[in-house]
Length: 436
Image 1 (cartoon, rainbow, N blue to C red):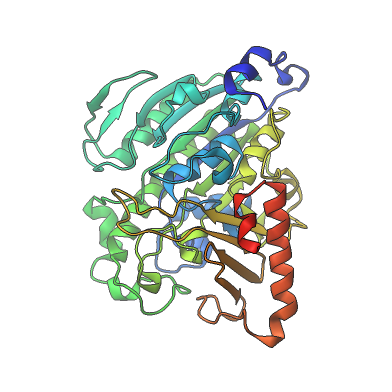
Image 2: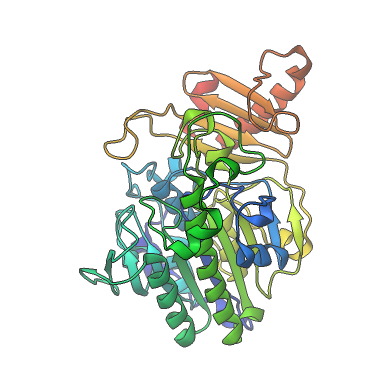
């Protein structure tokens, strides 16, 4: 297995030399984004016209999940194309890649002729330049920040400084400036903090939701649970939507749309009080399911697609479009066929949590390690303690009725366990011992 340094020394001439017009990639990441908090997801209460329009202009994965539902490991997966238990970047308390993880996909794309740029949240231990970024107009090193007048870094190697303004707007303006002068082909990794706490929003974004908190929960959000501030959460997302709209408008104004792949992804879900929990990390759908859509001129398909896909599929997708052969075997599969046809034969996607220690700062309780296998209709969870759960998502979207002991679901339980066991073998998952 090659290290990043070894790969960069031995990489061949850019693979893009023989390909005419390789597409640009604009990757927009939101943060702590409940999958139903888009109008395109069937939520009549929230105002997200720009992201809704993106969904209508491409492919909207209605069963898209995150491979590990927490900020730092989610980014590690997106950078590496590997599961968190393969990279060692397993939680917000374990934010560095283990030795031998190999070059990131950003490094590989840079080696193939792409200009690589980061704007926004970073939140892992290696610096952006160590992961392949050659430009970083403005970025947040830490997990979160006050939205107003945040402390950010300008440029590769920049020092922390207070930047006046609202963070969502700061990231947007810098992304637009980058697009105006970008050398093609480029990869722009635009990682917003919205709607991550601590929330702070202008009255104009709050106004549509003011005084209506009890009426704003998404239609399929589980009843009961903990109280949640939907008013402010929605306001932050509406601001994010306006920001995303400005960035997309710039790609069209600059004539970039036709040769650009645009992907919008939540870095993880958000429980929003479901089952009494806030935050993420848990195995429930509100935690692992995310907004997941793609558009741009290179995406031919249109409409919703219920194929089970995971975030680990995106690195393989980016390398596929860039005509770059992966430096090592990836854990995901390219979504290019889905983007081009709007059809899919995928039957299952997977999610994992591997760090059972109590977190020092963000979660003052341990979350038991688990693995999830999710199809269009069923969801299977296996915890480290060997506890199991099986849910029929068609009749029980709130995941209330565990069917593991149901005589009528014995065959389905075996099917889901077999799918998970096969995945564990393919990825050398240490959790294979849980089946013993």
